[in-house]
Length: 89
Image 1 (cartoon, rainbow, N blue to C red):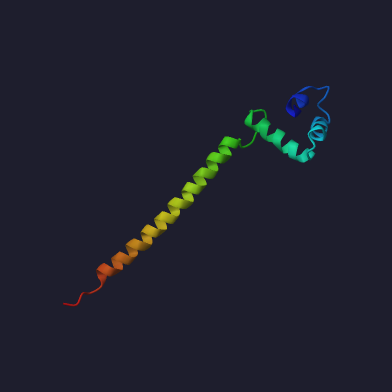
Image 2: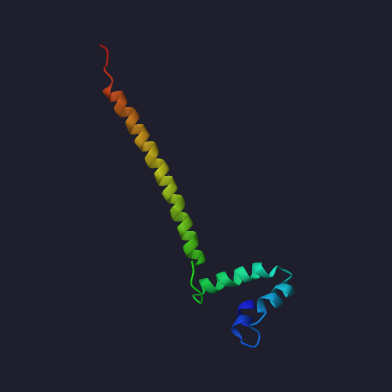
């Protein structure tokens, strides 16, 4: 409703304030939702919700891979040190 009112020049001014009052919510909350809806709809520039989710997934995967790589490096260093030890016969 807020998006539609903002598109109509006759109701554009104060549309978010009026809709927020009707819904019983803070205008800034509704403004953020409208802004994100405009970004997701391609009306406004920014990071879409799906792009933000994908980025978060990639960052999580990157952290897991770095942790696994660290574990593998530490393990290989340990076994390399074991191989270098002289054995007593």
